[in-house]
Length: 81
Image (tube, rainbow, N blue to C red; front, side, top):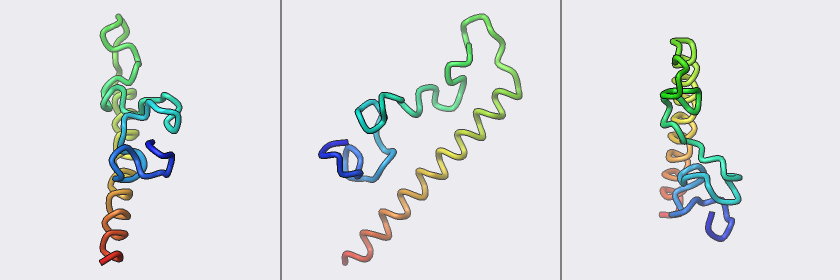
């Protein structure tokens, strides 16, 4: 995060960047875009329905957090007017 102020790379709030900097600890939160996430896709290991279900649940949680952050930011902008 530029300036380490918790606003993300463009001031849109936390979790809006790649997660590669010191605040994201190099985690790259969306590395697999919700499909595979390093579970062996393409490396000789089958991707089971259970694994896909878990990954999709993780993706839903991530997207809900993102939506919450966007709504909070919209609320902040409304109160500034």
